[in-house]
Image (tube, rainbow, N blue to C red; front, side, top):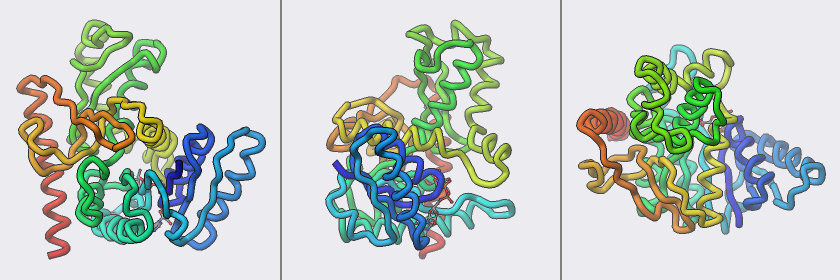
Length: 309
Ligand code: APR
């Protein structure tokens, strides 16, 4: 198995490390900056004897070594800097996503594309447009990260094992995301029976602002340990055909009453990529929140189309 990771920054390099150390696949790391991917790949390869894994890791600036990849993870992009508008970020990262997917298609046209760069729902849309892949083979990572944050905060609140907490977050990756307390449990017990409503509200709010909280602490740069863990779980489910049901940014074709929009919903991930989109039974309030989140994604896609008209 082979995974190409595009972007050898914090998220990309940590994805390469986790994928290699779990012996899921060989990894090719690529970055536009001369020496960056090659240097990090060599450093990771030199750790292999100590960590004791057998994955091959190489890095470079070209795309030819991506040939034969089963999955391509795309983290290339810039982080939003102070004073930068969302549209500025969209313009830059949208162009980078376009260029990267064009390059990937030359050498790995059959690879499943897993988008990570923000604004996630739009870079995933762009990847689908540029690659022409069906929705099964082009999707994005955001929900596993948002859900991981929600689960971590629930575990902190209750002082319980994070692994015992299951949770679900739907919608776009941003302020409009839709955490679902009703579908979140600790060892099968709904959190609504364990945590008072006002505390759940506070946890939901912290989840929505999870990315900004990390940026505020780090000052320079954004989260990468939890994002790379989330990517690795999705990649493992695909390459090992685990068929895990994970929140995934995927194009909807009528599910949840939504059509032709990329938003986070639970999906079964196996060797063919997205093998099934799961439709949860949402109440009116949850459905309205999901539709309003989808509207926010549509607006950003419209802004991108406007920039390229
Ligand atoms: N081709 C390849 N690599 C590129 C390109 C390009 N056209 N443009 C930028 N890059 C590389 C940069 O050189 C840099 O090494 O992408 C990398 C991004 O790394 P960081 O700046 O460290 O950003 P990171 O924290 O990894 O986040 C990457 O993931 O979670 C999202 O919001 C985050 O959009 C951001 C992305």
